[in-house]
Image (cartoon, rainbow, N blue to C red; front, side, top):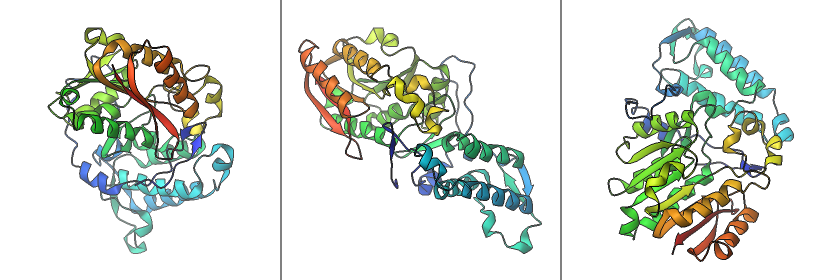
Length: 367
């Protein structure tokens, strides 16, 4: 259900997607959750707008005035952001405005549909009208990502909580979950094994894998960021996967010392943008998303090579790995390392394309 995606320094223009309203309808009722099994932290993730109760009110007339202001602000952008850094144009921003209204109003009310004779009534809102002015101004003036404005992202069949400080999951990363589904479909040993999602962020990959494994296998999701783990815990419990997915804090393999040589699968979407490219990223990405989740070092492969080295000792024989990269050049470097420098540890090492046909993933098995 995606319209298109473009790339700014190999990071997709993640805002150019069609919002799957049907998926929202399926998940709006899933709003009872508990964080009792979250990792020990004082951090509490923000609740996405669409899950908040409509405790605020505004007159329909005032809401319509806000909507007209917001639409005018979006329309004033034209193609300026596209020309600057491949950012959103006015038509996309106006679609986002419609989605925002669906999230914040009790009955998914669109002001443009309100007859003039009914403008004297009130409407329930999930944020105050003052906050609506502030949030939309952030979207346009500060180029704050829409996902951070509404507090969620649609990914596969999931609606995931996200907030500033946690990487927004990209559509091409969905393919990693498909790869796992393929390898476990006819391999009982892998299906019933222990998988890890390294650098889990919002928990997207771990949750996708957990839904595939169900009660057969287990997933450990790691991240260095306490905020990311708090957000991941929120998402894991929303999908009732806390008995399948365990969250651990730490850098890459450090929290997994008890699992050396036992892992059925290692999956990761690590930082892979070359350091010199960070300043040129789309403003929504470079200004707001966590640099620690983007910057992969001088050529972008620092963390990728670390993962390759660790996979040799952490995977059990026959264990599967899949790593996302910045593109063909990084893929070739990883394959070259695994085939020539990894001590004959791997087999069936392959480069796999993403939705756009760009060489994006490196997969294979432990011998």
